[in-house]
Image (tube, rainbow, N blue to C red):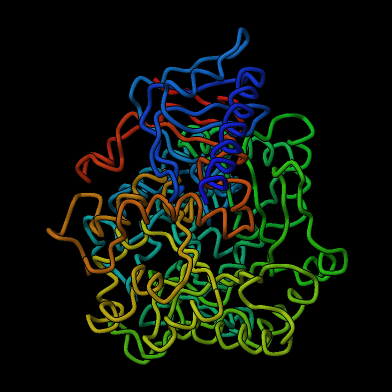
Length: 573
C-alpha cells in the first residue's frame, strides 16, 4: 500500500512539473488581473484573474498564478477591483427592433398620452405632408396619468389625429401586441364606422377597438395590426444595416456578448452573415426563424440547422407566436380577464399548427420556441410538445430543449411539466417589475400568487430559466432585469419586501440565468456561459459588485468593459 501511494505521489509530481513547464512556454495573449471574478463555475465560483489565449480562457485563479502566464507580448488589463462575470446573454429580444427604436420615435419613456402627442407633433413638423410617422414603446398602463377618454383600457385617437391631419401615424405598443393609428392612417386603410364590420375577416386573432357608437378608436390589437401595418413603407436594406449597427453597439455598451433573436426572416440571417464577413458583427447571435413565414420554416427544415463553427451566426430554432400580451388583454387565459368579463384573450396560431411545426422541428434537428404568455396558451403549447415527443419515442425530450418564450402566467398543473419535458422557460424578469403593479387587475390575486412569474417554482420543478428583456418591449439593459430577478420590485423599489418574494431568485441564480442558462438554451453551455478553462473568453465588467451591493445600487451600476473572444470591444468611462 505504501509503495502504491509513493507511485501515485510521484505521478502527481510529474504532472505538476508538466503543467508548470507548459505555463512558462504557453504565454497568454491577455491577462485580466486585480478583479473580483464571478465564474458561474460551481467548482471554482470566485477568482481574481483570468488568462486568455487565442480567444479562449487559458487559466482562472489568483493573481499570482495568472501572472505566470505573462510574456513579453502579453497585454495586461488591470481591472482595478471591478467585477467581472461571464458575458451576459440576452436570451429573448429583437435585434432589428432595438436598432429601429433608435431610428424612429422612441416612446418607451413617455409618461402620459399628452407627452406622446407632443412627440408626434414634433415629428410632424420635420416631415413632409403624406410622410408616415412611426414609433414604438408606449404603454398606457405605465402612464402616470390616464387620458380622460379611454375605451377598453386604451386611449382614443382624437388628440393624436388633431396634431397630424396630413400624416399617417402608426405607433406600436411596447409589447408589440397592439398599435395606435391616427385618422389619416385609418382613412388610407379604409377603416371607418361603416367598413369596420367588413374588415372582421382580416382580424381573426385580433381586434379593432371601437367605442360605444361603433367608431374605431385607433387601437388595433394582435393580428388586426396588419390592416394598417401592411401600408407602412417597407424598410430599405441601407436603413436595416444602420439599425443593425446601432443594435450591436447598444449590446456592447450594455455588456451583452450573445443575443437570441426571437423571430426573424432570411433577410436578417443574410445581413448577419454579411456583417460577419465584413468584420462588423462583434457579438454572437442565435436566430429563431419566424413562424409567420411557413415556407421559410419548410425551406430550413429541408436543409437543416446552420451551426456556425465560429459561434457568431447560428440558426437552429423555429419561433411560433401563440397568443398575445397581457397589457393588450391578448394573452390567452383559461379563465376570463378579471377586468374584462367574458374576454379570454386570443389564440394567434392554431394549436394544430404548433403540433405540426413541433414534429417538423424534431424531424429536422431544430429547437422550437413558442411565445406563450397566458396560462391557456402555455398549457396548449405544452400539450402539443408532449404529443410531438410521444411521436418520436427514440428521441429524448431532454436533448431537444424546446422552449416557451415568456411563460409568464401558468396553471399550477403545468409548472411541473416544464421540468418533466425539459422545456426551457425563457423569461424576462423585467416584465415582472414593469407589469406586476397592474397585472393583478388583469388576473386577480389568486392567479398572480399561484402562477405568475414563478421562477422558483419552475426551477424547483427542474426547469431551466433563461433571462432577458424582450427589447425593445423593455430597455435592453440587463441590469434592471437582474435587479428584478432578485428584488421582485418596481424600478422605484416598491413594494417593501417585493411582490411574491418567495419566488425571487438568489443573486447566484440570477447571474446563472443571464449566463450559463442562456448558453444552455442555445446548446452552447460547453463553449460559453461560465469562466472556465477551455471556454470562450466572453466577459462583462461592471464598476460595482452586483453580487454584494444593496439591490437598489444595481440600477446605478455601469458596464465598464465588454470582451468577446478575448477582444475588448467596448470600454466605458
